[in-house]
Length: 44
Image 1 (cartoon, rainbow, N blue to C red):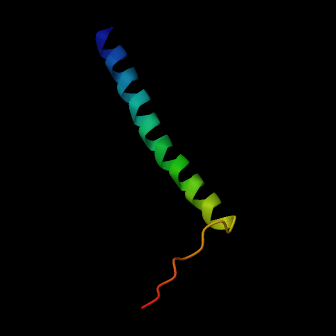
Image 2 (cartoon, helix red, strand yellow):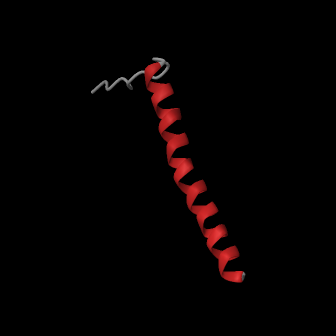
């Protein structure tokens, strides 16, 4: 019974960890696609 609980908790943490990568990719894609970000001026 304890083994099942531990495996369930590990799977939940793994899902949360990978879901964070998907959220970060979505934020980056929205940021780029919306055109709200412009490249920095490189005045040399």
